[in-house]
Image (cartoon, rainbow, N blue to C red; front, side, top):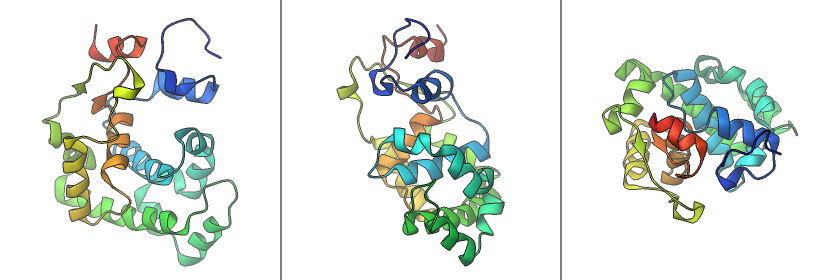
Length: 193
């Protein structure tokens, strides 16, 4: 249930955790590499599932993936990965768990090459937020030309589970794209009006 009657995007439903994520986090411009890595990991695990499922397991993911610190995730051993595969508190997908560790190593290399992941990811829009003006959820695309470009670039860097739909999800989450519906109170706040 919402704690007030402000208009919001319909996708959050009546789930309180989803509401807090929507109100406080989704679409807010991110400039911290650790947060980018968190979104990359979580959105990869979302593939084929609902965001609600992932969000409700987020704290368990945080424990398994060392507070989403890429340096710590990159050092996860085979034994630790196997233990994660047996952990019912997370989504136990062996390929996605291995991809998170591989992506942590790639994330570190990319940071060394570009100075930060943040600088790299924001370079695709010249550092500006793309504010869309969607009126209904059905209008929001699953991917765009931007996410196609980002996906291709990340794959060239060596990342896994970074298809265009996953990329669009973390571009939305990290605020490069503002896809709050125009009648949602957060849309106006993020535009700055």
